Picture 1 (cartoon, rainbow, N blue to C red):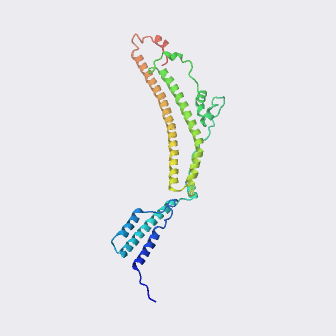
Picture 2 (cartoon, one colour):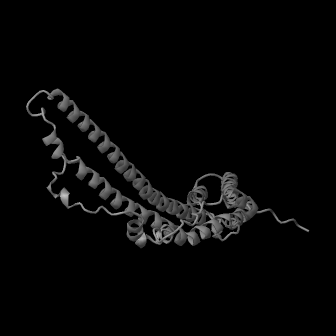
Picture 3 (cartoon, helix red, strand yellow):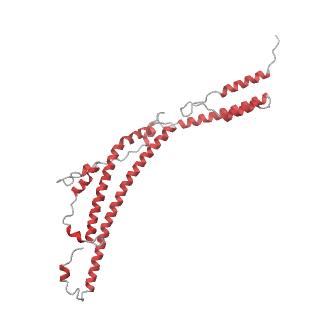
Length: 286
């Protein structure tokens, strides 16, 4: 039998067809979306090889080398996608979760009705703060004699200002505390749901996008907590300022009294201070 001559061009074309068949095989799914890895620049290089003036053998070698690069790139992307898809198991995640501190209920004793509204208010009813504070404190009575005092130079008005600012600040801060505890109870479900999603080890919550969303939600909850803590810290500072004011007024009153005493002894021999009876009879406690 006469052997048929080998067609070199047909053989090379067959190799090229086999390589092209390899090129169009889909890569593994990346990030769960089933994408096919496609590198336009790599295919453009193949087009340049096919249209070049090189020999068929050189084209075949160049095509093979380029195919290897495309395959290597796809394999690297696949390995990266596999690494990104790895996640911790539920026992591991659960073992890292800490317990959030919850507020304990207030158990203030109420003997004669003086704190009848206090526990309910502190436990999360901010609207009761004004009434609870008024019931638990005593009012300033018989203060009409202060109407003739000059603000800024009267110790008595300074004392009244300390009482009034303490009443206003304490009522507001009690309301802030009550609102904080009420909000904590309302936010408990959202915090528990986020924690459950963070400890979940299924594919439903472990993609890159889903994990980023969980981080964003955790940050949003943290921001709300920081704002609430800022309100509580502001109350602490305000209360400290009022306490400092009372101490400052007491020191100023003491220095003023010492100054009056000094003036009395310095002018004891003058006609003004010779007889202290008129001065003492008209003296009003500053």
